[in-house]
Amino acid sequence: MRRWLALTSAAAMVLACAPASWAEPLYVQSKKAELQVDTLISGLDHPWSVEVLPDGAYIVTELGGNLRIVRNGGLSAPISGLPKIALRGQGGLLDVALAPDFAQSRTLFLTYSTPGKGGAGTALARAKLSEDEKSLEELKTLFVMSRPSTRGQHFGSRIAIAPDGSLFFGIGDRGEMDRAQNPRDHAGSILHINADGSIPASNPYVGTGDGLPEVWSKGHRNPQGIVFDPKDGTLLTVEHGARGGDEINAPAAGRNYGWPNISYGKHYSGADIGVGTTAEGYEQPLYYWDPSIAPGAIDVYRGKMFPEWDGNLLVAALKYQMLARLERDDAGAIVSEERMLDGEFGRIRDVKVAPDGSILLLTDEDDGALLRISRAPADH
Image (cartoon, rainbow, N blue to C red; front, side):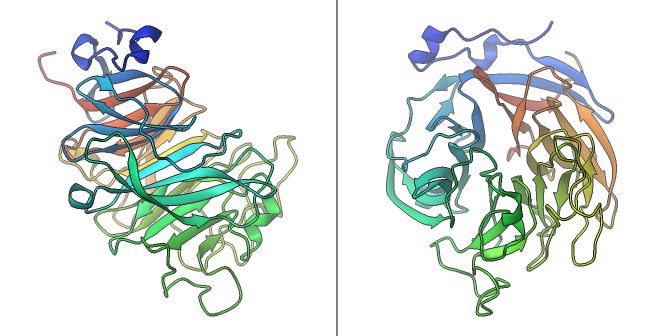
């Protein structure tokens, strides 16, 4: 028994899709647990990010510029009131993150590509979801990157909310790789701002004149995943390499992670990148892939459903169409990798550990799906 019923295009247009109860789950035996994978909804247009709302519904971004809610197997109409979005290549509506007090404030944050003089760049905005969930209210742009570009790639950009409520997010080199080494350029950086758009005094370039005050770290090619480990507060990112050289990093203030001066990959032409894999002044990744898996997002498993996975990293992969589970030792070093799903559902863009310990995935397809991984029942 394979998996799920296809959603008809007509059903998608009337805000309905196949309820999860109609779908046949897929059972997958992983190394430490048997998994049940359910399709909660399909018919999404290249979904990019998912968050769980307080009542258990889901809010999902679609790259083409729609923000929707999935509830009880149904798909809402697009939510109105979004910022102006530049649809260009890899650009569009990207991440959604809920404020820690969302249940009271209804505040959320979005990253997206926005038009600007000379092209497009990555931006971050704050807004409130209306009580009827039909629109965004009090929209405020908190950040727009310097130097828009006509290039259509490497916009980043996911959001990690720090314990103090400030925002970390990444922007790629925008296809102009030397920008990743310029601290006076937002491209190729991890950025750090407060939830009101102001600059934290602890940022490494504040008051120095040596770099832009929002910049936290440099030398990143295209970080599309970022998360805090909820147990110890470690900031982790996953980013795309070129032909190989995808990396997991733990960005620290003022550090340089090498791109394009060092890399474990090669240019798509086959030419070497920079001076090799190591050089003085550049940090090493915690882990890298060669060949590339094209990582879309990262999360840390700290749930109760799979206690044997506690502290593992979960990485969504686009090119290899799988979910990677990475085990760490007591010092935080990555010691093993398990690859799961292996092409069963197509390109996997997002991975998110839900409050109940299940795992949510989004597939980056024309007929994209929201999937839920739970522990398989013993009697299935």
